[in-house]
Structures are given as structure tokens and as C-alpha cells.
Image (cartoon, rainbow, N blue to C red; front, top):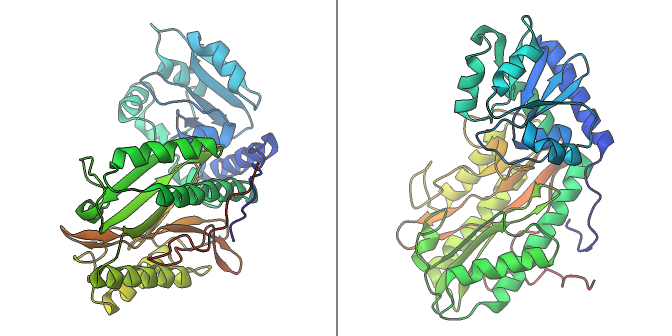
Length: 390
């Protein structure tokens, strides 16, 4: 269960990243891949610790199955990259009138296969293909996903702290709501609170009132809060790059019988998904359990509305959404270290929606919540202890 300690866990260390690279190299060797290219993606941070924004310029790394590591950067960014790297490796530079892809191809040589980070931009991949024949290029996803999907204790500690912060921010946001308040005001309040508690600010924030709550990702306006409105807030922050993502739904004022009925059905569906998440069970079985619960309460079936229009959950880590997913067709077996959202939203089109979102991580014995599910519709934060004094 979530700790209310304000102590920030230690960042991911060099030894853990070296272990990740060792695991990656083992997979590369088994797949017959000599080189792996990482772009400016979350996988670059995961394996090397280098956190860099994606742009049209290549900043990345080459991982070699034989044991080497090179960084790639424009020459004018060299000093900055030097100050950010924590794992040793040669830094390869290119000038603005030169091709980084030619540099990559020259480094790779005329033989061997290269796996390519699946998250690099299509335009970059096309430039790489102009230098290296398709037959020598492979998808790095199958090598990266099995490593990233199973989080270490250190990663789980980062997310536990991030989620504890976000749950406390939710509680504070609920306390300060007032009639006439605009959704954008609440977004700003949440960002300030995330920062004040040590998070990165809002990694995202959806604040929806009234019928806007029937849109899973919120409306495009800036609605003012009125008495009797359903309130849906979905937000998160980051600690050492690791994400939180929690949703709470309640009513500003008195809930109608219909809202109560839907809220209770949502809570049962979330509980059903949690109970279905057992080691070795396919991810899609968790989604199926949530939909069976909803169907028993008269929603759906399938993606039909009123009901659940999207998957039950997603993996989470350095990316807010990452595989595997709790959705039909994903047959990945649940395994220790996997972390998921549990959010089988109920949408009543044009009227309101209810989403309760908490996250769990898999242990050898089964799922364990990062945060307690919402206590009740009327007292959404009754069981959330006050944040400790610092």
C-alpha cells in the first residue's frame, strides 16, 4: 500500500543501467543483432540515463552486442551532452552540414544487422534507410519491451512516490473547488501543487465538469463549475522520469441516483479487473473481467455505449502509456514487475462519465495497488492521510 513518507527515493543508479544494458546485449546476441540505435526517446534514458528532447536532429546512442556504447550528438551540443551522460562511452559528433546517418552507417560497418528504436521519427528512419540497406535493419521493440515492461524495485519506488504525490494533489484540488471556478484554474492549481510537493509539475492534466466528463480526454472548452456537476480529474507528474496517472470522479454537490448507480458499477468493474490480474494470466483477461462486470450492470457489451469505450488499462513507467496493455488481443502473460493502470471508464454519451483510475504492480503473489481506490462517491478522500510535514 502507498507510503505517505515525503522522502524521495534515490534516483536510478549507474549499476542498474549497466544491468539493463547487459540484458539488452544478451537479447541482441540471441537475435543476431550486432548494433542497436537508440534515438531521443524514453529508451535512451532507460538504458543510458541521457534524457534528451526529440527534434529533427539526431541525439542518441549506439549499443553494441560486443559491449561498447557510443553517443551521437550535433557538435554544437557536445559540451551539454558531456555534462549529462553517466555511463562511459565515446561521443560521436556531426556538424550541421553533415549527415548523422552517414556517421551511423560508417560506425556500423559493411556487415552485421542493426536494430532501430521503434520510437524514432519516421523521417529519421527514412534517412537511415538511405544509408543502410533494409535487409540489415530490424525492429528493436522485441528486444527493448521485455526489459522495460518488468520494473525493478527502484523503478517501482519512483512510481510509488510520484503516485503518492498525485493522490495528495487530488485531495487538495477537491478541497478548493468552488462554484464558478474554471477548469483551467484547477489545472494551474494542480500544477502548482505537483511542483510544491517535489514533482515535475503536471505531465498532463484533464479537468472536466458536467457533460465534458463524458469525453474520455475532456472537452475543448473552459467550463465553469456549477452545483451538481460531475467532476472528473485525471492527472500525473514525474519523479526521476517515472510517471503517475490517477483519476478521481465525484460530484460538486449532491449526486443524482443515476450518477450513483454508474459510479458504483465503475467501482465494481475496477475491482473485478484487479481480481483478475493474476501471475501468468493474459493481459486481455483483465479487460474481459472488467467488461463482464459492466455487462452484469447493464453496460456495453464490448465497446458499446453507455459503457467502456477504450481499453481497461495501460502499462506505465518512463512513458505514461507503454506496453503491454490490458486490452483484447494482448496475450502477454502478467509477470512480476509489470505495472498497469486500472481504469474501466463508463461513458453515458452527452451526459456524464465516470472514471476511477489507480495503478497496480504485479508481484509473485498477485497484484498490489500503488494507491487505494477511491473511498466513496461522497467522501472521495476519506481514507487518504494528510501529507506529512516537511
